[in-house]
Image (cartoon, rainbow, N blue to C red; front, side, top):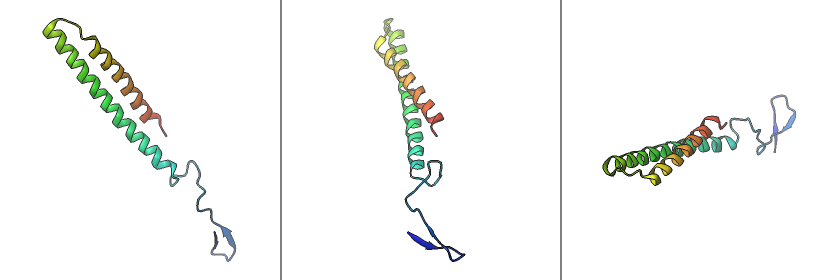
Length: 92
């Protein structure tokens, strides 16, 4: 696309060319969406871990039997939640 500048010379406008570090580039909203989604997923995983550990503790207190499945799901959920929150922190 050609346009006239103030000096009367013609210059070419690159309408669809973006730089990677340009704040107006289309990659920026994607990065923000990835950060927001990873924060939501991280918090949800940590909440699931807390619920699983609470259920495992309640089962242990009431029956004296260690609820290994709840504890393992809680542990995996906590690890995934921390990884997702780390991703949200370091994603640019």
